[in-house]
Length: 441
Image 1 (cartoon, rainbow, N blue to C red):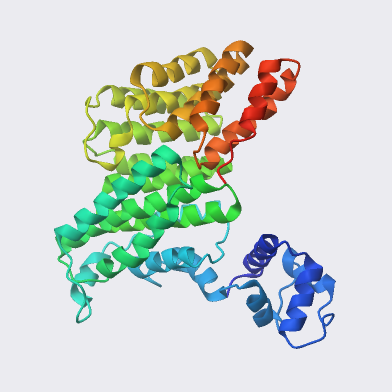
Image 2: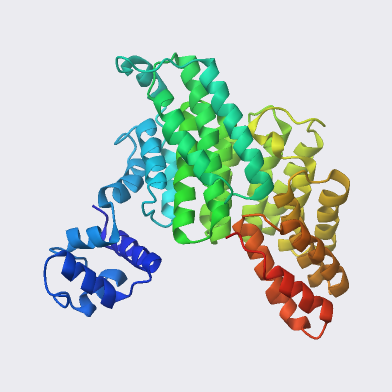
């Protein structure tokens, strides 16, 4: 069973989705229990929603009318927070099925993110090779290649059109195609490759959920996917994928304003990446640490890790490899570094880096380019260059059309709010009107 506060959050969120207040909840629960419509008083339903008290006798009827799966809601948290209670394969499949069935997810929390650091079960794959059930499907390199190819196809689509595009395909592929392979018969070598490939798929599902919406349920769903991606990667003994999953948790903590947790997760991310012979990956993780430190107002730490990231990206090969961090091009590094510098107050250097990302290195994904344009417009406005900001933001609006990304939506909303000060300028008003049409739907 969920705790009282977890249960209150589930009830409140389910009521919000239905547009119900405490009066409607009380009436529906009364009817479901075969009682008169006023058997449950409004004040009781209000207290259930606020967490002041939990339904006892009425709980089965609350769960029925709100379609709550209390066992799954608790399990989705407990299977991750209690190592060994459920193995990673069972847990990640259950997570995906809960997502497919549109069950409620608990909100992201800093405590849950940090608990991921102690989760890996390093003997998981060995156990699976010894306990495959009779008749289990045989898994080889072909199945692993199929997962990797699907991750690339779905990832390319999401990078171009946003995380809200085709996320359900990634989750259904996990639950319907990959799940039988995870429970199949394979050697330890194949098992490690399969877990690594699945880690990338699960990480992608988390990124897509985070980019699809910024509500508590989207963020909670993303956080659980990231934690499972980390478990799978660690059990596959893949330090790069482990670091990348931790980076997902760290960036989410930055976005949620959990500064201390973001720094701790970023430190763990850097530790995993220290021994890698992959300059792009090292740059990726060092920049994450710099970002978290800047968010934490630690200029010295941010500057040191930003320099380490710059040194690493300078050593990176011109052509991308096949690794998970290969997408972290010099252009993407320039964008992230520019925003770190902006956070540190160095606006001239920030603009230079953002311009570098756009003009010299280029950005091959429309979603990424839109976000960089939005950021550059914001930096120009902070420099009191209103005309320059309007010109860049006009490019942003053109680029953002049709992208389903909460990050793009939020950039458009931020731009519109900042342009309120310039309502007397016709071009600013026109831009505000165009930006109002940018919604991920």
